[in-house]
Image (tube, rainbow, N blue to C red; front, side):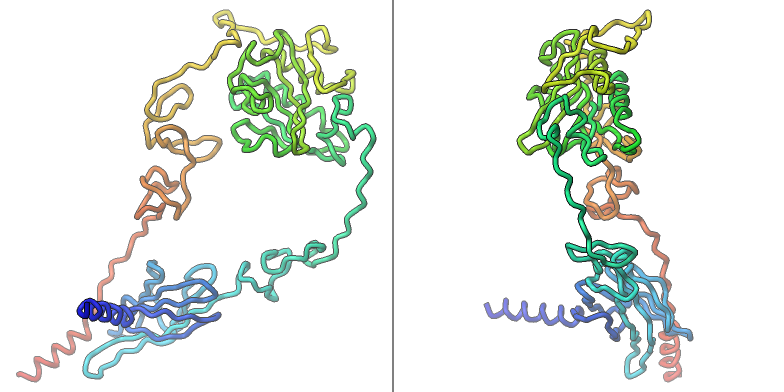
Length: 427
């Protein structure tokens, strides 16, 4: 037991000799010998510094630091190097000592510069340039780089016709205070007919008072379909959002969609949290476009209730039916028109790609993880393989850039001079 305590004591002593932890404020000045390591804390930011090489052969002397496992460039006296966006290292003096044995040491200074996010509102910062440090109080807002008291205009009383959720009040509640109060959702596998229907609907709401509406979202981009008001174009056959609000399984086509054949439906669905969905769907894509045409021209129709069925006889405006080429077969929407492909990787455009394959999807770099296309990872994110990283380099479990390290050739002129002196004694 005593031997174990002795060993532990020796280990701790050695550890204290080679590694020191120094806490500091905005700056710290210290002196280190070659190979000596210390860790400094500046405003909760840690920097482990080691002078790995000090050249004192001929003046001017210079030093090379390792800081947080990153090599700094060669620095001469009075040189300054930016460690990161917050901190710099300044070389003050490089010395060589000849007292019995030869050793070199460097005096340096670590300086923490003012930066946005350090919790201090400095003279060069304001609520506009750095809201993190110079943010305004809750009842103030930043205006022209100054915090001014915010005066909220009185809320307009709710109109009587807007208190009830009914198609006769459309576009309420999707337009509020002359601003869009909804998002449009179409299926990721939607047909061109559904896309056109969504475009016509959005364009019908843009006018003199409403100048901007968000582009439509794909159903696979929505995390919570109930978190906001939505206008959903397309039925549960090809739109996951429609299936969710209807309480059906995605891929419910034809009769399983519960939509009458040769009909389109316009349905208001109220959620328990106060948000509302407007479902515009049809037995087939053409019927979906029929229902969308009625909503797009809502001023010309007598809308009422929470749900309406739309047939061809109800239309005031003709909608062209899609024409089939001579070699095309009409697909019955009651059957699954997707062809399953056996693939031990990822499928794209009907082709099978092996694990590790890379490409672009929606202007984003992706890789095949074995079952799906996954966005490539940024620098310093965890990884296992090179193909997971945007820079195609996974080192030590993280995406890390490969940096070429300069070859360091130590000048041994001091030791050569000592050896020459020793040989001179014995001549």
